[in-house]
Amino acid sequence: MSPQNLLQLLSCDAHYATLLDQLAKACQGAIAIDAALNIVWISQAYRAMLQLDDDFDPTGLPLEQILPTSQLPRVVQTGKPMFLDLMQISGRWCVVNRLPLRDQEDNVVGALGLIFHDDLEQLQPLFDKFARLRRRFEKENLLRTSRYALDDMVGESPQVLQLKRQALRAAQLDTTLLLLGETGTGKELLAQGIHQASPRRDAPFVGINMAALPEPLAEAELFGTAAGAYTGADKKGRVGKVQLADGGTLFLDEIAEMPLAMQAKLLRVLQEREAEALGSNRLISVDVRVIAATSQNLAELVQQGEFRADLYYRLNVLPIDLPPLRQRTGDIPVLAQHLLQQIQKQTHLPPLALSQQAIHWLEGYHWPGNVRELRNRLERACVMAEGEQIYADDFGIQLTDQGHVPVAIISTRNHPSTQTNRLQQQRQQNDYVLIQRAIEQHHGNRTAAAKSLGISRATLYNRLKKAQAE
Image (tube, rainbow, N blue to C red; front, side, top):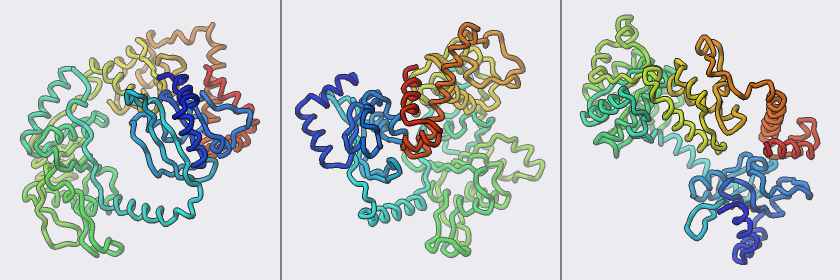
């Protein structure tokens, strides 16, 4: 359904017109958007809350220009309602509900946002209860669920196909695994895929990054604490990640960063299937499959005395090497396209295509950061691209990236005849970015945003419209 049809339906159809009229009277603000995330209707009360000028009509504008922090795009994307959420509008906290709009074929054609309460003092008891439940959930539910399967590893190169075959066989063996590979090669994705392909798939997948844990907290996080184990400890004790993973898979990323004192306790888990909480003298039986990962050379660390030899040999039962991206360049075009679609879906950016010039550069770059760096480059390109295609210079090319810029990198956009037009477009884009940041900093209050930028409110709207028209 087109935006025009949806607007006509909302404004002309007797059923919808009556519904919108009743909603406008029953709540303190209402707004509707179409599937393209453009505003198709807004109540007078909502206009007043947004402090919009009487002669300004936001209909047809992208929602993000008026409400940059709104979650209505998420409702359009998922088709699921969001009830009793909090949102700050013009410096005021409001309780909002969001509902998807569907056509007769049950397709999502837009979303409706409703403000039902802007006096939060009366709802303080409800918020206090919600805060207590949230703290309890964050304290007790430490699981990082498995989101990926082996099929999510994109690529058809011989290296990736062999890696998938090894991972599938390893998934059935239920033995300890050691994933070896450079940073950014996808070790956690592979670990989750192995878990999903294993008989433990219905049990928890618990992941922990040892490099991200301060050493004093590492033991408590991994093995838990007994009641009153130390001053300030939880009176009821704390369940560790090892216990949470009971029956499932424990993924230890950056295992080389594990303190030596903890390595002996992990060895007991692997050999005896027992764990001991910090401050406890009682052993707890656990049934976990351990998948460890590292980007370092553990054999060298063993020789240097920085990693236990017995733990290394216990972890190294079935090592799997993940190839760096530069060794499977044939996968880069399809992988880049896959990541590009993910980025655009998550950020709601307009569709962009990779030019042949951009693909050529991607295939020639050495990728020290592997797939993670590829995604970061694509995210930058989505922001910097000025047309409907991504070019090589949108990736943020530096001479140190490849030692030189290939001839194929020279963009047709840099032709002298286009310089003036490009400069004007860039200025408008910069204006748009600065204005959007100011609006976000002032919580959607455009009058305050314009004042902070030293421009009038009318100038702010004119520049937004110009940037939108480009």
